[in-house]
Length: 251
Image 1 (cartoon, rainbow, N blue to C red):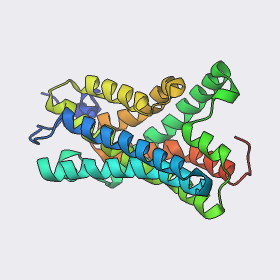
Image 2: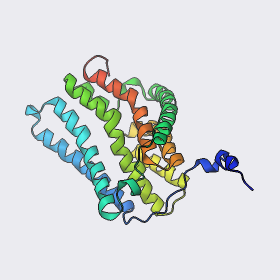
Image 3: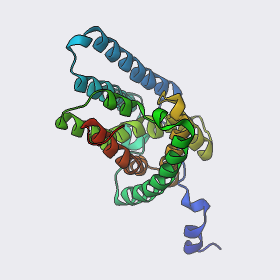
């Protein structure tokens, strides 16, 4: 007979059991949300291009970076309301003390892994090619301090919430509904997360970044842990974006 302690210490028991999925949305919902993200970015880019001589560069960076991601996440939440039981149940969206503790643990692990990966990746592709899409935008247009702080808070805190709702929430739940195995769900969501940033040169680095975030979701079974992991992992890049945006550090 297995004791309670043995069950707790079992490696398999560390993995959260996948829930029984009863919602009516699936992979098509993720594709729709991703289409909203891409189309919004295209429309914003076209609109700013049409009025380029009169456009505030800081507004271009803020609106072009923030609006598509936030809108896509809002649509994902709406899908769970209209076709499921809401984000708390469908996306396993919670922020308990256990979620925060697990998020910090996986986040610190991610900081170490991604910092090492970023150093190796920069040496391979060259420093001139190692700038992210957001970093490139900031480098091309210095920003007022208020706008730079807003972008910093988005990259550090808000962006991870939105991305986790889309990838480790909506996409994860869609694959579980298709009865994929938990490790297959972890693997595919990590790959799609990396590819969906539409930065081909950085895809390999984004894969490394996505691993600890996905592991937080896998081992806890809840979205709150992966959100905190993502936020911890994004802190240093967000600080770098802030410093570049105000001209305190070269890109």
